[in-house]
Amino acid sequence: MNRRTWIAAVASTAMVGKAGAQVAPRGLSAEAEAFIEEMVSRHRFDRDALRALFEQVRVQSQVLGAMQSQSRPRPWFEYRPAFVNRTRIAGGARFWQDNAAALERAQAQYGVPPELVVATIAAETLFGKMMGSHPVLDSLATLAFEYPKRADFFRGELEQFLLLARELEIDPTQPRGSFAGAMGIPQFMPTSYRKYAVDFDGDGRIDLFRSAADAIGSVANYYRLFGWVTGGPVAVRLSAPAGVAEAQAKLGIRPHTTVGALRELGVVPATEVDPALSAMVFPLVMKDGIEYWIGFDNFFVITRYNRAIHYAMAVFELAREIRAQRPGQAAGS
Image 1: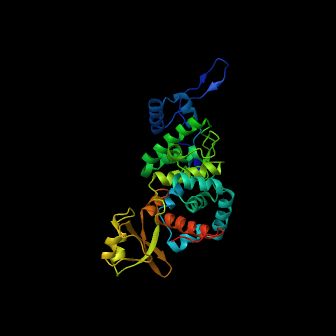
Image 2: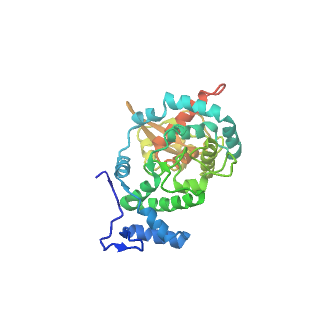
Image 3: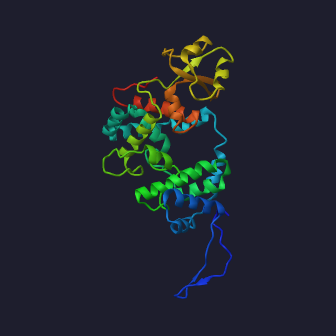
């Protein structure tokens, strides 16, 4: 079956109510029962209401399949065209024009450039046109109880989603999102929604599903709180002796050295940058070989939105292309 319930029916004798209607009691999995007890204990949820809610949840086989497919990443030369393309570049220029005031205000308040915010929203949902169709409750419950590899993470997100639904006073069965439970124009996971989302349009409600301004402010706030360096570089191509860049790339995506230290190893940035800047090296697989780049603190910050080098590079390049489409603007380095 493509869809199955993770709530098992309990074999027992039906009880007859006063009106003569038969009520067949149902049972939840042990994992679901334990989760419900935690929500009751920690957050004072109503036990019966949660049980009734979870009886509606269905395991999403497509969600499990999508999670498995994530383990097979594409090379950069195949990944890039899906994100850095005419549709997103032209759409980004229009989105910037339509939301210029909010973007300028976000830059002034959070120090994050408009093109980065626009490129992130373009990469995530094509400006709200592709926010996902999976029931968020079903997706998170599926991954919390049927995907042991990351069950702890998704149990946490399920907890945060229920808290969010209670705070926003919405029916938790209604929101739709990505297969992993990300929601709204910027595709925030529930934890991020509660922690980083802001009411940027001033209407007294944080709405990442319908308010472009809230999405803009929330993305900028997210990057700021993860350490965005205003005016700092993101990434630059390098040249290096054989083997040096490859060895550096194996040390991880968190900046762990400096540009000056890399220079001592023979690594030369394509453009002049401050030798004191924190840095790391990462590879991009091209059709004709491997390119190596230096990533700075701001590159690492973008990976906090999606922990993949390809994603961060796509957002960086898309941002440059979108800025180049603005009158009087030029693409950054």
